[in-house]
View 1 (cartoon, rainbow, N blue to C red):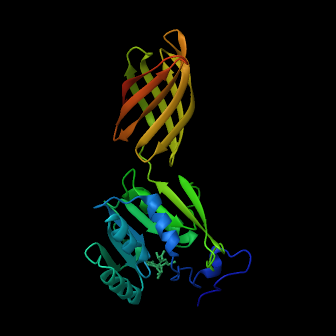
View 2: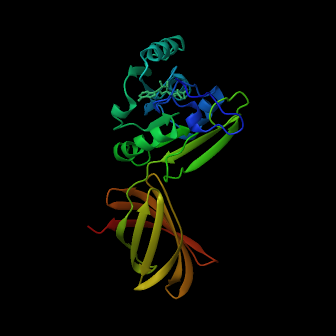
View 3: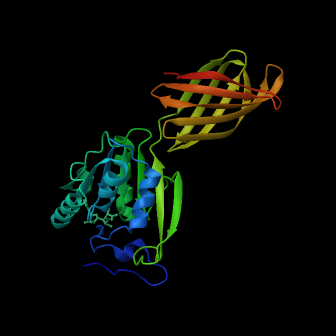
Length: 280
Ligand SMILES: C[S@@+](CC[C@H](N)C(=O)[O-])C[C@H]1O[C@@H](n2cnc3c(N)ncnc32)[C@H](O)[C@@H]1O
């Protein structure tokens, strides 16, 4: 039995769980589906999976608007039939497919976008699989609920007057990018600006804690960001006799970072190629 559809004033996630804790069928409103997909930006040909696809609306809209190749996995066979029929009516049956499948057994390797409108406990259970199976840069979008201590990269709140479950009258949409593995000691050369640079990076999800050294001196790292494979480090230090700001930016691919460094002394700025290699 559905425990209770909503509790006036402060509807919690539990208030709309089935008694056994599984997620019941409740559709994301159309404006929420649109916003989820805008945040995830599926590209034509990319694979998208909706975990618990209900009537199929997310996968169908992703096919219609973005040309994405989608799979909706759903435990309830009658909903899979309904979603398949909806896809046919929308003329996107070649792109939008549905399967009766437990979301915990779904193969997510090679998937670029995962969408979900599941209860928070379910999100937490699925999180290790998302981190393990998806490639850096893959996007995960969730309606209303987060994933424990993995903070989203972006959160959007929408007013949705008709919303009667979870947060009443509004929806939260959360976006995560699967972070590349950037931890470790990285070495690089910036010939005219400090020569050999070393970066020591600790990481939790997309949060980085970085230190930098050049010419044997500590440099101050006062900003760092990792979005998927994209890394940025903002460093200030005395390089070549002048205090300079350096913005290192690049893509982390395996044990290599490739990009550029923007160097400024407050008057002039210059850009140089930047590559770094991880110490084994
Ligand atoms: C809240 S609905 C979301 C439907 C759709 N994704 C949307 O946003 O409109 C969650 C769906 O997940 C399905 N579901 C629950 N547990 C599941 C499981 N273990 N595997 C697959 N589907 C599941 C439910 O049957 C339900 O249709």
